[in-house]
Figure 1 (cartoon, rainbow, N blue to C red):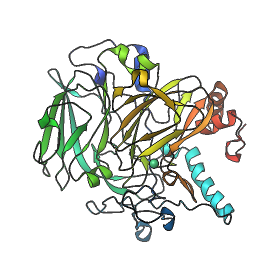
Figure 2 (figure 1 turned 135 degrees about the horizontal axis):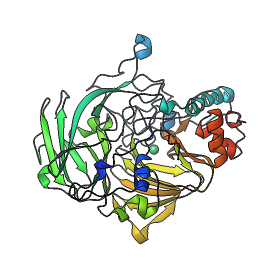
Figure 3 (figure 1 turned 90 degrees about the vertical axis):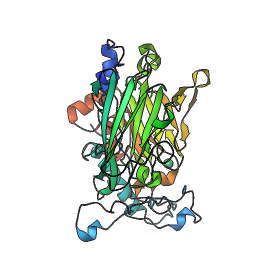
Figure 4 (figure 1 turned 45 degrees about the horizontal axis):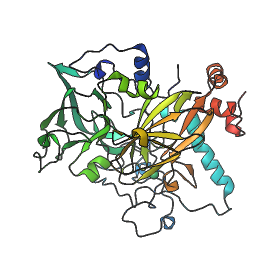
Length: 435
Ligand SMILES: [Cu+2]
């Protein structure tokens, strides 16, 4: 059994087609329960390199300790910005430190980089409360319709353990919102209650559905006013990796957390990813790049969760980009097999790569055959989104491929899976030379 850093098991019953209660085999249960969440996005660093409107070279910006805040002065732990005033500003909110090392200050830079990696190796991803992208769980059934009830809330959200919480938005109190898994052909109903003090509207991104269910306020419906609810209902037709997000004041509302994964599994079990590709983990990565900096599932390094796999295991990663910038995801050590774009299978046009650019709004599914043991960096390769003078931050985590030795070492000593896998693969890092 794998040691996933944060299990994101999906309810079996959630996945049963409402019209056809199927037997779920044990293998699929294991697969479904192995789904993993990764965290995402430190604000410590920030950036301007990709800012669409930036006219100033990114290296003109000095490192910014925290994009939003004040809290140190007040000693408070509350939100660093008030709702409605935290409009994400990619040109200034990220404070990355893209300036190259000059050769001076190496020791202090190493010390800063060491401190942040230590936090990652100490399992910060498991210590920060409020992880998003958790499975919705069993929906209520109304006849043959699966009913999901979702609130739209102001929340206080942590990007990592050290930064003060940010004043964010969430569905059912989390960022990203609950992961919704349903089956092709399901009758789906989602009731959204707007608890904000502003209007909103929810779009199911990628679904083919009736026009008046498309969630574009003022075109297909009126805005959902504060205190009001709106019900979206349709039959899930479009298989694959999709999303749901605000489509009203979206730069602000999506940038602050109104986003979530909407996964439609094929009705035919033989066509589902566990059987079709032989994967045993189904992992969603939702990226965002506004409030809180560069995030994976609402968290930034070192609070991002590593993916932990066994040597020889195949896993599926669904990249969902809810940000405003393209992010090229780069995996060290082994290729990614790209099998679907925007939910549509590539079939004979599938391809292998180690760096995959994912534009805003796109979803790409990749299968990774974990053939190489060790702790492999897995990060956005726009470097100002990932690493600067103070070390790694933001869109960085690791794919940990454990052999039997690494798994035994972790079990015997309690060291993190990242450390034991790196050690097993011969790491010469002081931090990873164990036993
Ligand atoms: Cu990026």
